[in-house]
Image (tube, rainbow, N blue to C red):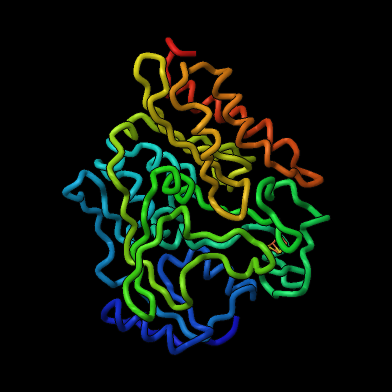
Length: 330
Ligand code: SF4
């Protein structure tokens, strides 16, 4: 591991200034992803700015009925928070579907959003990877790509974003509050992560050195009827092969409103706008849910080893929505 300096700033402004002056530095929060990548030699920061003691660790209700989640709130604490469990169960379920109890006790809200892909070639410094070393190629494109993207990938990168929490936050239209070197900024989570294009090394729309300070979840009354369904190779502890975050608002059997987002299908958490449009205003049936998923997945371009993800995502869309609709609407 490359030697590094360590600094614990007293406030947000100092943290951002420290990283702005250190092009190869990194923020350290839970460290559950960063420290692994440092050990592997994938990330080699020369400065760690430890943000764990900044006052960013509370969950606060907002006057409009929404929630403000501090950047360093631990995943375990957020999953167990009574307001999250009551008003946004999909968030709690997404968090509890991720990692192990020990990791959730360390991992933070912002760190979860900014975690790096688990593409095996990204973590192997002996293999070509445009994300790790721009211009070297993509070993996954014609290699082991079973777990990788089916939507929106490029010749330069076919990786997926690994976060479960981000999928739920995209479905809920959450907003990131951040401090860039030039000052505060807000970014919808739907616009936080980039498509890979020709530059998969650029993963978010944040300027270098930006510190996420909080995530704001707007009120969504029907999110009390929401869920997160994740398919993974091991029930105990594994990243998603495919996942769906869903919230459903029914008036009788008519879909008044719906939120859908998919995980493990693209370089960014994937909001399923086409599927939502196909559902709104129609009588809910399992067949309609399948048709809606097909509308979203019409743009899918499976890789050599992952065509199974298309029916998998369709099936878990149907499962999530029929569970939310209840037995009378199946
Ligand atoms: Fe690297 Fe992306 Fe290709 Fe994986 S898919 S090897 S992360 S460029």
